[in-house]
Length: 331
Image (cartoon, rainbow, N blue to C red; front, side):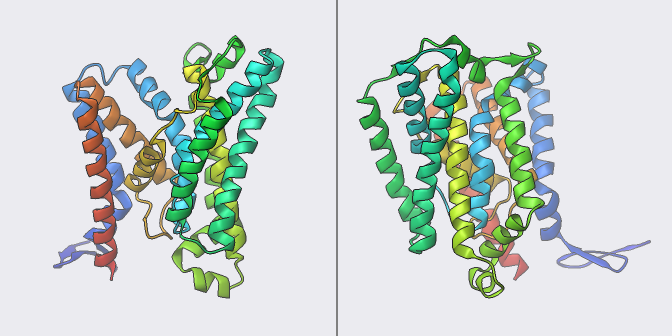
C-alpha cells in the first residue's frame, strides 16, 4: 500500500487523515512520553519509583478537581470557586472534629464537608442553569463569598486536630506502599469515566456543550444537566477538601488558594476545549500527569516558585491557543 502526501495531510489508501486530526488524537500522548523520556535522561531522581509515586500523590487533590472540571468545561462552563469551596470543606471538618475529636466523628465530619461543598455547587448551578447567568461571573462571585464564609465559620483561625485516625486519609499508605490519596483519585477516575462515557447523562453533557439550542430541541433537559454537573463539581470539591485537610492535618480557611487554576490548566492541557463539547476523562488524566511532571520537574531543578507561576500561565495560554488553532483548521 502506498501513501500519497498532499499539502494538508497524508492519504493512506482510501482513508484520509489530516495532520491536525493526528495531532489532536495522539499529540498529548506523544508529549507525555517525550517529557518522561527527557526527564528520565536528565535527572536520576525523576525515574526512581518513590518519585513516581510522589508525583501521582501530589496531583491527587488537583486530579480529583480536574476530572469534574472536565465535565463542567465540556458543557461550555467554568468553575472558579473550587478552591474556596475546598476551604469551606476544610473548616467544616475542623469545626466538627474540634467539637468531638474522636475517631467515630470522622465519617460525620466528612459528610458535613461533602454536603456543604455540594450545596455550594447547587448554588452555582441554580444561577447558571436556572437564571442563565454567565458561569465565569457566577463562580467568580462564589469564589469570593465562599472564601469569606470559610473565614466566618473559622473566625479566621486554624483548627488543629487531635484525631490521629483522620491523618490516615491524606498521609496513610495501603500495604505500606500506595498512598491513600492515590486510591481516592483512582476511585474518582472510575466514577467520572462511567458518568461521562458510559451513561446517557454523559451524552447529554456533550450535547449541551456542542450546541445547547440543538440539545434542547432534541429533548435534553439543559437546566438539569448543568445543575447536576455543578453539583457534582461541588461534591468532589468536598472529597478533595477531606484529602487535602487530612494531608496538612489542619482545618484552614486559607487552604487551596488558586487550586482551581491548576486543575483547569491540567484539563485544558488534556485537550478539553474551552469552547465546550470536546474532552474526555482519559485525556484529562494525561493532562493531570503532564502537569504533575511539570511541577515535579521544576522542583527537582530548583526553579523559583515565582517563575513556576509564569510557566504555568504560559502553559495555559499555549493550550488555549492550540485549541483555537485546531478548531480553525477544522473549519
